Image (cartoon, rainbow, N blue to C red; front, side):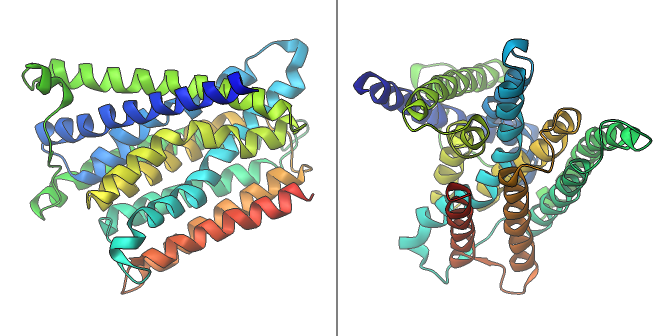
Length: 339
């Protein structure tokens, strides 16, 4: 017992160090490329920090055939649980990180067009993935599942193109990526160039993946003492561990006033997961019969629609708005644990 929780603590410290190492590397990369904060957050940072939760479902689904059903449940739960965590718990944690300074009515100001673009792409792709749950694996409609899978992959490539195309205009409007602090590798006397930027990105990402994988192993060991089913485990516990990089990076950015980077890191990862990861969900799904799966879909969509509504209002997103997303996560927990 003590060893398990000691392992969790050590892995959490590794993730915290890795997040500090990782966060300012994309800023220097974006500054060097002269691109907007939206591109830096939604593409570079989001895809990089999405690696831990990307690996978990893929490895689970491709795991031993002897535990095919368990592996499939863990994989699908991790795929659907990741957007759930990002749209509810992570946004809530960002709000709490600035609550004392900005108060409940204070503004959170991600660049509006990019924020709405991310939400629109996620809502469209995630809704398609939800639809795929009700399409049978066999019969005349089976091909529709494959068509949705292909469409999800194409959607992400369109999203990348649209995001990159908007970058130059945003830079002209003053939304260029600016690095506020020296890179960590500069502190040991290395210059800032392409090699050191990529090296620090690789170092930070490697530590993030290693720390998250170790944390996941510790969470799985601890959950065995609680008697939680593989599906519920993957929907509730594994995403908390795998989403730690996004949570910590976004909290660090929003505390520095970099709201666009903070939210772009979250919403960009949601689009990545709602398209490329949910593409795997279309091929391997546990079906709509599982109450936990349906509940996670509904809460995720409700949280994202809420963000879309408040972002489109004249006053924009306020701190108390993202605290509502935390309440939605508590609602999910209360229903799922008593199901």
